Amino acid sequence: MSDTPRTVDLRSDSVTKPTPAMRQAMAEAIVGDDGREGDPTAQRLEQVSADLMGQEAGLFVTSGTMGNLVAMLTHLKPGEEVIAEREAHILRFEAGHLAAIAGAIPRTLPGIAGRMDLEQLAAEIQPGSRFRPRTALIEVENTHNTAGGTILDAAYLTQLCDLAHRHGVVVHMDGERVFNAAIALGVPAKELTAGCDSVMFGLSKGLGAPYGSMLCGSREFTQRARAMRHRVGGNVRQIGPMAAAGIVALETMIDRLADDHANARRLAEGLAAIRPGLVDLSLVQTNIVMLQTAPLGAPAAEIAAKLTAAGVWCLPLDRYLLRFVTHCDVTADDIAYALGVIGGNI
Image (cartoon, rainbow, N blue to C red):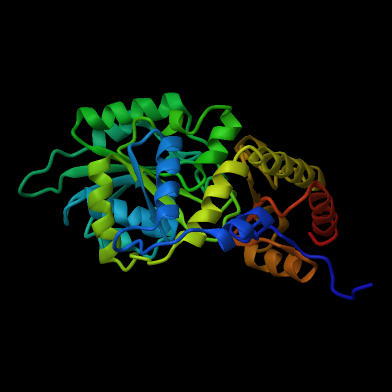
């Protein structure tokens, strides 16, 4: 028997390994120069992705951060304003590209479970003048990472998009985990993205592919976005193997996200049973569980270090906030094991 202690990695759904079917598809992929005449496998992935999002075309990008940046560069002129929820990933975890590279001015609004109040949003939209920037784009995140994987439903998104379009403002969705939202709601993802002018979603989070995200929108938008992708160094050449893994992810890994949601619920309920007040169960809607460490009298980083040493890896997001994320490489048995470890160490 191995002396290596068991490890359950709940830091993120980005730590997954490609499935055997993905590896086989990567080995057999037809490739071409995506920066010249095009890579046929990437082109197929782009069209499959666009169809799933209810959009005309797609663009394969290296990461969700690149997808969001390319969307901003394509939609915006320097000095224009972007409204986003205060804790949005694009503001907190993407190295400040909105201002530093796109030259946009962020205006933030507080949200409840990642959801901005539409009345307040309408009041914040600015037409622009020689003194004030024009509000050009509203960014939404679905699911919302730092809110705990919470969902924006189709009714809310339709109202938001209608509001934006009445004011001549475009809407971009950071849909890195939009399939988690779709599975939790029991609807096709395109119902959640229908009103958006562009949408980015990830292949390398819960879908388990080893690389990449997709940026989808109109054909005209995507053509311009391709030039912006090149500008920021995203013009990858023979990308077919990675695109092939992405296609397998879209064909085989969406429906099974329900298993991750069930495991997150098991984890959340188990944590609540260990000590009430650590987890807000109403916010556990998909595959992310947030644990408040203030009731334990210790910062999140201290608790995370203790749990990691015991074999349960998690991520401190704020001083008193720990994140656990379930994914395709975590089983129900892993959750039971993790709860035993956590219960003995907090």
